[in-house]
Amino acid sequence: MRRRLTGQGSSARADFAEYPNPLLRDCDIRQARIKRWVTALLIAMIPVSLWIGASAHADQQQRLDSQRGSIHQVTATTTAVAETASVASTEFGSSGAAPATAVDSRWTYRGVEHTGRVSVETGAPAGTTAQIWIDNNGDQTIRPLTPSDVTAASIFNAIGSWVLVAIFLIGFFHLMCFRYDGRRNAEWDREIADLLGRH
Image (cartoon, rainbow, N blue to C red; front, side, top):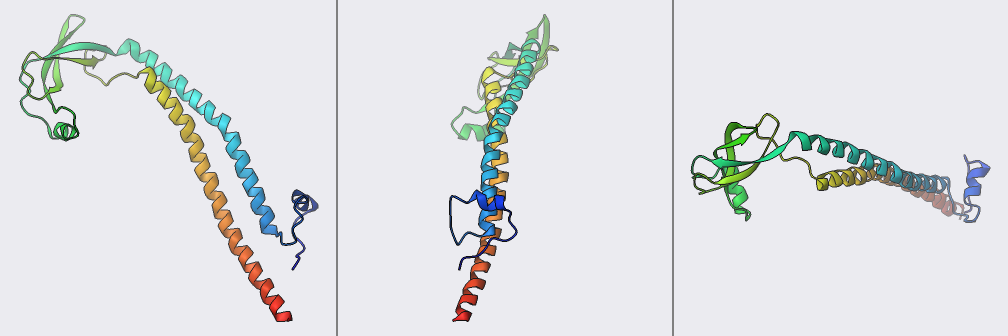
């Protein structure tokens, strides 16, 4: 049942010269080549992913440095009793955290008093203090980045980029394996039928 390889040059056969297998087929050679290319690309993607992670780290670090001069922490003082918790706060409270309520508060930044609603523990009396983040205008804003956030972002970008490429390449490899398996089985069926027909 030895079958001469067709459609392949001498270089293709040379790839498997060290494996003299009379059952080797064209699809076997192509499938092995795809596997080698996928492996090579996955390895080559490692330094690319590290570069992506380093770039993300530099961008996030620049953002962190910018926030250090534009976001500040001040102490806010509530002006009312935190009587009831919001629906969202109640859901958090059910997971073990203390329920919180947004209540009218005031704080001072650069000699100017500002007002707004600040989340404190439900039931807290008026005059309760809480640390909040504000921008250069004295308005509330989100918490600034931390060095841990910068590190996490760089790691996520590095690993995430490699994983995305790996999913695509491995998916392509398995798709081709599925096609070649079907072709290989069909060839075996034809040759077995020919062999039985000659006997």
